[in-house]
Length: 82
Image (tube, rainbow, N blue to C red):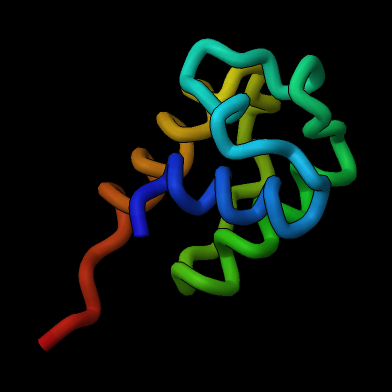
């Protein structure tokens, strides 16, 4: 699952945020993703991806910032598929 889809699915299931509002340029706070929801989303990412988040992860402002962070974490983590 790509990062944007993960964010859209999580927001819809946990905050009644319509998926069409989850666009790269959207400011997270403006679309209803507050700091608590962001933490829950990050925990969901950890659980579904098996990737541990670093303690110094910068606070994203926009959906694109968050997508970039999640994609970067995926790229830095070696694949465990054999």
